[in-house]
Amino acid sequence: MSSVNGKNSSPMLARTIDEVRQQISLWKQAGDKIAFVPTMGNLHTGHLSLIEAANKSVSRVVVSIFVNPMQFGENEDFDKYPRTFDADMAVLEESNVDMVFMPVVTEIYPASIDSMTRVAVPQLSEMLEGEYRPGFFTGVATVVNKLFNIVQPDVAVFGEKDYQQLLVIQQMVCDLTMPIEIQSVATQREADGLAMSSRNAYLGADDRILATAIHRSLKHLVEAIVAGENPTFEVGHACQELDEKGFLVDYIVVRRQQDLAVPEQGDKSLIVLAAARLGSVRLIDNLLFQLID
Ligand code: PAF
Image 1 (cartoon, rainbow, N blue to C red):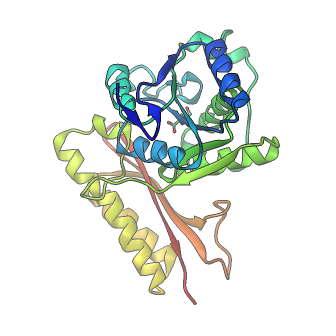
Image 2: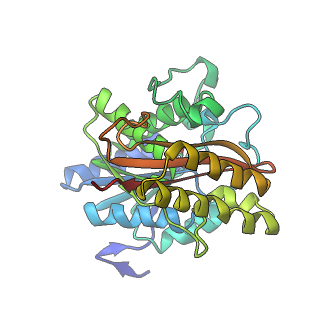
């Protein structure tokens, strides 16, 4: 067994809430700070960048792997979502992680999901992704809230790839006065620009090549807006480009970074967000940018 930065490289595997609580309480008694990276598994370089950030800030890192049924719609991919637990554990063995929490569904939802308490972050949850995936962010906020209550982290780390999710979690933590610092990490991309995502594995070979067009379109869109072109015209152009390539575009929008509201005169910190489908695979991406005077 090797040791990285003084840590044992094999993480403890916890399956129950009690196991997590007992270990966290020992760590806290010893004065350790806890950083938490919630995931649904099928770990890729994007997740590793979150774990790396977690390791920079505190002494103990906890990763959860839980495919959360509450955040999947009836016609979504809960059943076929890639579950690669053995490969994930192999990756985590090498990632300087102290604990992996991998509960079964009934550990998190001991009663029927429909009967259980939910955490809703209004307004922010209803736009963009929320419009196309009703109930999604309530499912995310609820499970993250439960995981926070179990792990009681000082810091939790989320990726900017799911930017709206990041804001929903930030608002939940603020509104519910949770003593947790939320850190964000920039989107990790494949060499050809495609944002890393577990769902990229669903893409066939041809669609995998086509999928890179989303990032290219967003890059051109940002360049055009920064150069002073008309955002509405440029968004229309980007939609048309993707449409012609065979995408079904759900949305491409320019919003404010802080709250995803439509930008007003003088707003400088902006983000373009896109969601588009290639066959049955739905891809999302975004780019943060600044307008300069
Ligand atoms: O981003 C994800 O993987 C999930 O939405 C999360 C935050 C782990 C909640 O299930």
